[in-house]
Length: 141
Image (cartoon, rainbow, N blue to C red; front, top):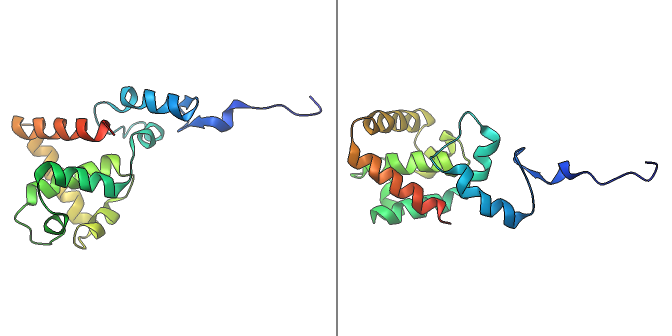
């Protein structure tokens, strides 16, 4: 006891998983499946990735150039709303930062677009399927 002892607590990832990086990566898809973990913010970190990577993957899914999504008045409003949602879910950045990256939008504009998207998800099966496909693409890392 006088010499001290090693504690495993310093190696806990996101206050939820104890293990080497390879183990955490293997476990990640099982933990993050199904979208954001707003009620479990420490687990949300396990599902996060670089916001630029999220933006690139989602824009690639839609076949839209990043510059087109970053225009304030884009003809791709629905696609941009999906990008906003995915960047928030997986990019570990705030709505304010998302707005800055997508044409200098205010955080409230990002919030409104995300709310509108969630409302549409309740009745639009095609949109739900699109979100599920993008979730799968992002979770495949």
